[in-house]
Length: 583
Ligand code: G6P
Image (cartoon, rainbow, N blue to C red):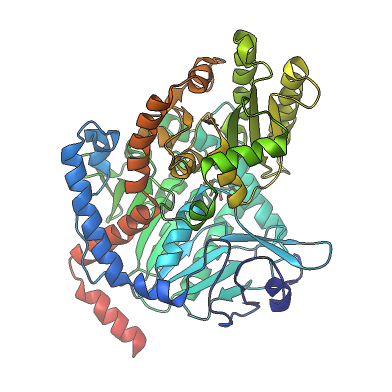
């Protein structure tokens, strides 16, 4: 395991707007826990008190009902969607949890040791962090995450604590022994569950050693959560496929807690899940939750099918519940969103300025159309297939040769796994081939950037682009699609979106594609779409992205958990338990 390298002074020297105090055992050092857009000044925190949040939820839920009546054709209000989403239950204004603990493999930021010995802090990649950060900004949480990566912030023993001086946020890192981390994260989570849940043509690898490491790690994380609990009945928010076994373990350790598990990736059909030798254990673990949240109504259906078929749980499709070993789990869709009121969007220059500067950087004349793709480098994202569609465009439409450039950002991810190395080779080889066929000198159709882009740079690309292409072969939600819509307050630009991304359930006004078919018609249509049509589509999508934003997601989860807690048979047992703990 790597030694503890992080020091308060080195972090302070780094380029976040505000500073973070990191100490081996955690102590309040600073006004804000400031990681890129994640600063919570005292005043902002005060204005976002739980009481105010509860009022916001009531207001939002009323406006949602109003909108549902006004727009029955909106996909959000299709009967299948409404069956699993809970827009209607107004939460109690007393929605003030004694404590909220998030359990997620990724912490909100990553740290990287620089050549000069200082440490670079960046917001972590992926939709999970994007979705959770606004929740953390707006309520007081403890975040328990894995510290056993290559990060220089990984410490020994019980890991690191990071705390803002407001006392509002706390980070607890759990460090796993190397072999356990390999089996849990690279092995079972990313070579087993990741391909299984995405149900692609990449075969999951199930090794018993990995599963045992996964189980050990889940128990270790659950112990850290229990150790962080300062009351008997906290709200526990368990995140994603890294922690399928944690809910039942947490139920055992903190029987009075309310456990909400959110699965950020797709839930596979029962027949696919069955191929996992430990499918029953996974379901048994997840059914320790009070609420199991998914991205789409299809995921909810698949989950209910799975628990009925594989462990014989009693399910009600009408109520969206599964009862197993005396515990009832509510199964709900909470599509994650992006932060509508977002500092980066606010400070990004207007679209024409971005277009000019990006074209200037790339050396492109103003009449060249620009496409963008922003993905983690992952075989689920369909980047190679996207390049094949670009190749087809240039084959079929001569008018775009030398007149279309596509900037693809692909942030490397899980690089030590062979599947990711292969995906990287294919992506590079395809881009080079297409560029060799259709490029001329420095003017190439595909500009491939295999690196991390900071949010400000990503939003500059979104604003500059004529088209954003999201070609996931399968995706839980895909927040890039929503970020592009969020960025385009000029109501220009066209979103080409895979029908296999969860986001397509909400963003039906995008140009929906089958990413497997090597077909350039959507791209050609996007590049020639009249302004009026662009604007009409963008306006519809912006209304949805604004309404179901990250705040809606977080508030919905908190509100549903709260109403569940108070609808349980003996709410006063919680009060008694709390009294016992504080006595
Ligand atoms: C997806 C997963 C997240 C994960 C992210 C980045 O969005 O749902 O749980 O954090 O990818 O992947 P990584 O393995 O780098 O954390």
